[in-house]
Length: 271
Image (cartoon, rainbow, N blue to C red; front, top):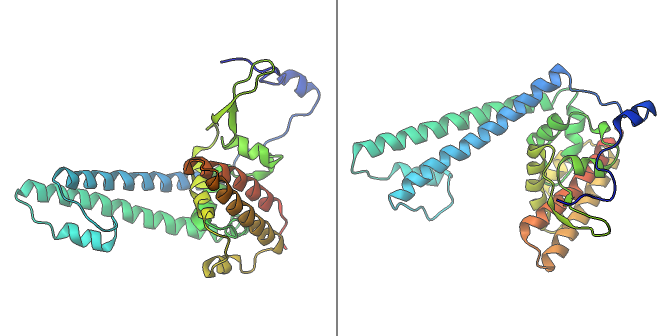
């Protein structure tokens, strides 16, 4: 990999002597506990995906295909109605279903606990602000806040985008500048959440009944930022799609800008 024309790392001793280092507040024990709870919730989500994958492949190996949407009530009824030649197959199916039921119960309980925390200080206010955005509800807001814990440490939206690994990497030498895929540094969980949220902006801008309820009682400034975000991100998603860009790349580009709008909203004072 080539070297860039400018130094990659600052002179730490020099900036320390110049007294220009930025103080960063570490998370408190309570914030660390909430963050661990959020990560446990995400672990449970991954466990559920694995359990469902195992059951799905078990059925696929036996040539059993469901024509509707998987993991709905109708899908579960279809699985229960299957006839098996060997008793071992029935035992294995019940084991897979028991594992899924167990993880689903874990998720329900963890979600309930996180909602309780979100409704109390110090999370109630910033969670309410983030819920003003399309595609963000309580759980997503809680996971973002718990992972980043102090948005004031990011002096600009670009700093947050870079921390989340949503900016293009660069491999430059001399006068040649080459940019590649995103760096994928920083917090992978928040990066994934923002990319998932970005898909909501592929549709035309609108404020539905659920979003109106989430915005009730929230500061006008935050709502205005969320509205600007929706207008711009929907327009950007559509424009990039018209240029025949790959959909995953479009979602990443929209997620990068969404991070900037979230940064702006969390700088807004309460009304």
